[in-house]
Amino acid sequence: MTELPPTGAPTAVRVLIADDQPMIRLGLRMIVDHEPDTETVGEVGDGAAAVDLARRVRPDVVLMDIRMPGIDGVEATRLIRADPELEGVRVVALTTFDDEEYVTGALRAGADAFLLKDTDPATLIAAVHRVHAGGSLLDPAVTALVLGQWRSWGRGQRGSEQVPAAVGTLTPRELEVLLAVARGGANVDIATELGVSTTTVKAHVHTLLRKLGCTARAQLVVLAYESGLVVPREEA
Image (cartoon, rainbow, N blue to C red; front, side):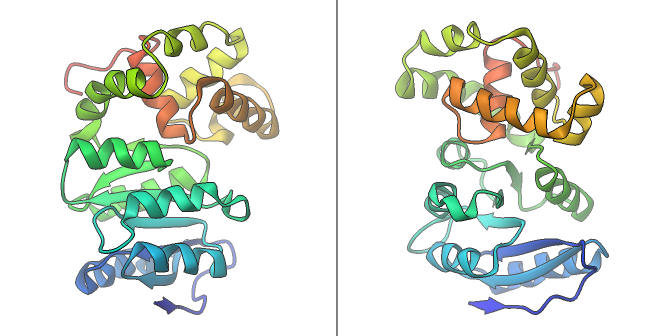
């Protein structure tokens, strides 16, 4: 477990890297620290250490490898989500495998974004900024898989009729916010689009998560697609 001193600008996004491969950690740290507005504040090699260090350094974003020994990235994400003191920590799940078990597992645990490890540096940094701003992101390579798995997850977790029924309880404004979230908008973007404050958007998102039984914005995105509120493009 390595805790690193701050090196970036005072407003830099603080990133914790969790991966069991030292070379991968080095590569991610080089990408993060190369940018003037992101900085690495720690790196670890397993999920338990990721949770422990997150509690100590309070990062803005965790780049979380899904497959790690001991406590894997899915369970580590779940533990971070369950800790009230880490409420503001965002998680970008990373893997070299587009296995449905890990994709849906990361989403169930509350990951804010899901990327493959071969994602280019610019996309990785964009994902860090997007989730830090309150947005979400699914790698195009796994989007179709996630959408295909959502219905079976919904039947197992909520019952086949509960997702559309819950969507039907939303107010017109909540539906507007849900659609904006599904398009990947961050809180500030949604606020500008709807002519409201970011505080109001945050309140609506919190209500959406509660009403729809979700724990992260990425789950709202998939639910919006699967409920037919948003139709994916053919290439997705």
